[in-house]
Image (cartoon, rainbow, N blue to C red):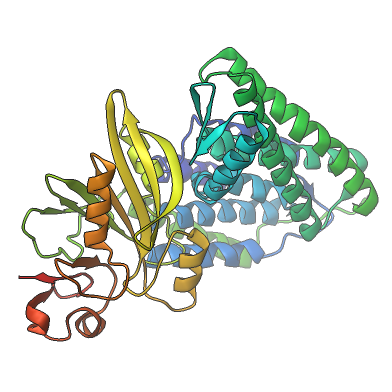
Length: 472
């Protein structure tokens, strides 16, 4: 074990160097939480559960080479090694390592997006004289933006990690331990308290007109976290552990685990797998022309990395971001545009000409752009993360995220009407760009025949993943 752990640490640092945000508050707090939450029961032999979990995750990584699967496979391999030579490990450190990972922050940001809009509306209804437009609350001539920092990755990750530290501290102190289900239930209360704390925070910021990037703004955030999340959770978690925790009987018998043939064999299997996974992560990945659509008049079409297709004209910029399966993350506009220096304002769900879309105002200095996005697979469209993921999980065709951006709202509406007809296929001037359809489906659904109503249909390349159909 003395050799394996340093090797795994090197693989973690090298193989995940472009995945882990080493300086993020969530990652650093997670590292600080591990000593408080980790315990080994040396009276019980370590099981082989994490060996099979790690192998399964590595197999998924080979099928779908995304960093998340390698991260999970690597940490479960480390835990298996520790269990074999130290003792049975508890649940909390695994939850901490998941919570401190970039994928958790990504999911927290996206899945709390509808909650942010609801919090904005609720806070606006509480503050006298406030007007709500998307994620913007206007009060006395000042606009307050409820961005992800208010109810996204920062507060959510911090609240969950603090909750795990509190649970771990009380369990060690009283030698009583919650079951897996009870632990998850108690942590869900921490999430709920975080929502309430953020609502109160937003109301205070608007009511007292506290602007961003000021000491008062940060002070209100810290006080909300401490007063409405941590303090109540301390009393609640202590009660739950004292009331429902299972006492641990101290036994003198300690298993002295020595290396055996089967143990060495299993570690000998995991180590080459993790080394190969590190090599796969470091290997340059070519930019694949993922089903280039036909170049249409007025649009310049360009294939970008990670299955993204860009269509650009003098009026609009359109991104079609193919999502291969339900467990993939997507290039969400609220992340990609922020990486380009833009901030999101007036984020809201609207119905335009019978189409439900998310819209927002992109601001960078004096530059303002209007953007909208939705998910589409050619047969169904939705704005809900859960809806499209469940749809694909149950056998539907993969979806794409469609993001349209223009210089003004009128142009944006016009382009969306062109790219996303309200019902069916057809209509004068109609052009539909759709992802993830097979060749047979494309011909039957979108073309029928090459002469259908004077239309032109072309299915690009050998994989037939993208179809462009339009008027001559």
